[in-house]
Image (cartoon, rainbow, N blue to C red):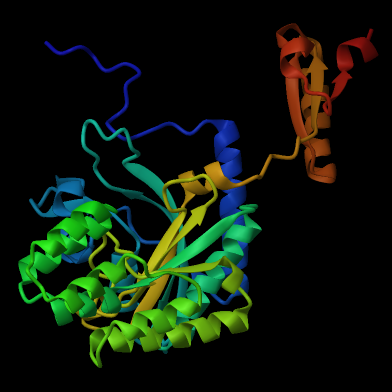
Length: 389
């Protein structure tokens, strides 16, 4: 017989204690306030979705999905992201709403982790979806809003790293004929295995010029100057079109005055396969994982019967909490201490202070109160037992 589960939690799940949750809620409010001011309206979707609907449309790998069966035998999933559910709603309940749609959300998402991974399987996402525009202005708005929310949440040093799926895949298509070789090279880039990338390129028996163009890809990191450098290694195809898109995006970001926070990285890849153009990640100083991820996904809406372009991003709340300098302001509390025969008087006084002055009031039997344990410096104590003595 297996050992009873007492205090254990399922793999990847965690409890959030009051002090931590207080910070998380504060950050969520800052994010939502900022997004509302940019014209985004909040939406909520179910925690459970049909596998055939949202599970299949999501970019999350199938082995990362939490699956279960309903009473009718249909397969359900715990939502692995919010982009696919919102695409479903935008194509059904909001199908008659004029485009573009600006939607925002705060929700927990679920992705299964390997036994040895030690990562969260449930985590909070706060983000936006901008549905219905294919202009560089829409990508610029999403990126500028990401900058705005990170600043609003007290992240002092960060960069938004921008790549482009069209450039990377277009360049590989120009040079590497075999699709399997292209996928292998993308895998090296995704895992930042640049030594392996160079060795694999050498094994492809390309001419010297094409080998040099591929290796040049690894150096394409920087600011505005990178655009001309990227253009120089492309021909008039998909990759060249992506470079022109990035040039237009940079102009829009200059108008937003956020380019100090921007860094191009044209070998950036995502593990989500629905991105079709610009993609980006936000990194704080001294953190190895992105605080936020986003990009353009022009093919997803068509899966729900409303073909149209879209872009967006999501902030990982657990990582934002590690990066934010926010420290909770001490909340003044009023303790009303009472004896058994003073209960009614104490509770009436507590109710009056809460309603009329908006104070945090704790009514406490005197014998259960210990000032050394319960009281903080800013707290006030009203001891009715002394007043009635």
